[in-house]
Length: 121
Image (cartoon, rainbow, N blue to C red):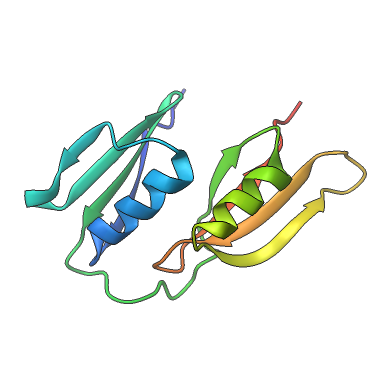
Protein backbone atom coordinates (compact mmCIF):
# COMPACT_ATOMS: atom_id res chain seq x y z
CA UNK A 1 0.00 0.00 0.00
CA UNK A 2 1.25 3.50 -0.85
CA UNK A 3 0.85 6.64 1.22
CA UNK A 4 1.03 10.13 -0.30
CA UNK A 5 3.97 11.68 1.51
CA UNK A 6 4.36 15.07 -0.16
CA UNK A 7 3.65 17.32 -3.11
CA UNK A 8 6.36 19.59 -4.45
CA UNK A 9 5.68 22.65 -6.61
CA UNK A 10 8.68 23.67 -8.71
CA UNK A 11 8.98 27.33 -9.68
CA UNK A 12 11.39 30.07 -10.71
CA UNK A 13 9.81 32.36 -8.09
CA UNK A 14 9.75 30.34 -4.85
CA UNK A 15 9.65 33.34 -2.49
CA UNK A 16 6.54 34.71 -4.24
CA UNK A 17 4.76 31.33 -4.19
CA UNK A 18 5.80 30.75 -0.57
CA UNK A 19 4.39 34.13 0.49
CA UNK A 20 1.17 33.34 -1.38
CA UNK A 21 0.74 29.88 0.21
CA UNK A 22 1.54 31.30 3.67
CA UNK A 23 -1.53 33.49 3.21
CA UNK A 24 -3.65 30.68 1.75
CA UNK A 25 -2.71 28.26 4.53
CA UNK A 26 -2.83 30.91 7.25
CA UNK A 27 0.52 29.96 8.72
CA UNK A 28 4.23 30.38 8.03
CA UNK A 29 6.17 27.55 6.45
CA UNK A 30 7.31 24.79 8.82
CA UNK A 31 10.60 24.44 6.94
CA UNK A 32 12.38 27.41 5.37
CA UNK A 33 15.63 27.43 3.42
CA UNK A 34 15.55 30.55 1.22
CA UNK A 35 19.24 30.16 0.31
CA UNK A 36 18.29 26.95 -1.51
CA UNK A 37 14.86 28.21 -2.59
CA UNK A 38 12.75 25.92 -0.41
CA UNK A 39 9.66 26.42 1.78
CA UNK A 40 7.44 23.64 3.14
CA UNK A 41 4.35 23.02 5.25
CA UNK A 42 3.18 19.94 7.11
CA UNK A 43 -0.54 19.64 6.33
CA UNK A 44 -2.22 16.72 8.03
CA UNK A 45 -0.44 13.56 6.89
CA UNK A 46 1.19 15.19 3.86
CA UNK A 47 3.83 17.80 3.18
CA UNK A 48 3.56 20.65 0.66
CA UNK A 49 6.84 22.03 -0.64
CA UNK A 50 7.70 25.01 -2.82
CA UNK A 51 11.15 24.86 -4.37
CA UNK A 52 13.32 26.46 -7.01
CA UNK A 53 13.36 24.31 -10.12
CA UNK A 54 15.62 25.18 -13.05
CA UNK A 55 13.27 23.67 -15.64
CA UNK A 56 10.27 25.78 -14.63
CA UNK A 57 9.62 29.18 -16.10
CA UNK A 58 6.58 31.44 -16.28
CA UNK A 59 3.05 30.21 -15.82
CA UNK A 60 2.24 26.53 -15.97
CA UNK A 61 1.32 25.26 -19.44
CA UNK A 62 -1.30 22.74 -18.21
CA UNK A 63 -2.76 24.28 -15.03
CA UNK A 64 -5.48 21.68 -14.53
CA UNK A 65 -3.29 18.61 -15.00
CA UNK A 66 -2.59 18.27 -11.27
CA UNK A 67 -4.57 20.14 -8.64
CA UNK A 68 -4.11 20.53 -4.92
CA UNK A 69 -7.33 20.02 -2.96
CA UNK A 70 -7.68 21.80 0.36
CA UNK A 71 -10.47 20.47 2.54
CA UNK A 72 -12.64 22.92 4.49
CA UNK A 73 -16.17 22.99 5.86
CA UNK A 74 -16.34 26.69 4.87
CA UNK A 75 -15.69 26.64 1.12
CA UNK A 76 -17.52 29.91 0.38
CA UNK A 77 -15.89 31.83 3.25
CA UNK A 78 -12.40 30.51 2.45
CA UNK A 79 -12.98 31.25 -1.24
CA UNK A 80 -13.73 34.91 -0.41
CA UNK A 81 -10.70 35.13 1.91
CA UNK A 82 -8.32 33.62 -0.64
CA UNK A 83 -9.79 35.68 -3.49
CA UNK A 84 -9.04 38.80 -1.41
CA UNK A 85 -5.34 37.86 -1.10
CA UNK A 86 -4.97 37.78 -4.88
CA UNK A 87 -5.69 34.26 -6.09
CA UNK A 88 -6.94 34.00 -9.65
CA UNK A 89 -10.54 32.79 -9.77
CA UNK A 90 -11.05 29.82 -12.06
CA UNK A 91 -14.50 28.69 -10.85
CA UNK A 92 -16.60 30.22 -8.08
CA UNK A 93 -18.04 27.85 -5.43
CA UNK A 94 -20.58 25.39 -6.84
CA UNK A 95 -22.31 22.20 -5.73
CA UNK A 96 -20.93 18.84 -6.77
CA UNK A 97 -23.80 16.94 -8.37
CA UNK A 98 -26.61 16.16 -5.97
CA UNK A 99 -24.38 16.46 -2.94
CA UNK A 100 -24.63 19.46 -0.67
CA UNK A 101 -20.87 19.83 -0.74
CA UNK A 102 -19.17 22.75 -2.45
CA UNK A 103 -16.03 23.07 -4.49
CA UNK A 104 -14.18 26.11 -5.87
CA UNK A 105 -11.13 26.35 -8.14
CA UNK A 106 -8.47 29.06 -7.94
CA UNK A 107 -4.92 29.55 -9.25
CA UNK A 108 -1.66 30.59 -7.58
CA UNK A 109 0.80 33.18 -9.01
CA UNK A 110 2.34 30.55 -11.34
CA UNK A 111 -1.11 29.58 -12.63
CA UNK A 112 -1.24 26.22 -10.80
CA UNK A 113 -4.84 25.27 -9.97
CA UNK A 114 -5.94 24.41 -6.46
CA UNK A 115 -9.37 23.66 -5.11
CA UNK A 116 -11.30 24.22 -1.93
CA UNK A 117 -13.72 21.44 -1.14
CA UNK A 118 -15.99 20.26 1.62
CA UNK A 119 -14.93 17.12 3.50
CA UNK A 120 -16.01 13.97 1.68
CA UNK A 121 -18.06 11.28 3.31
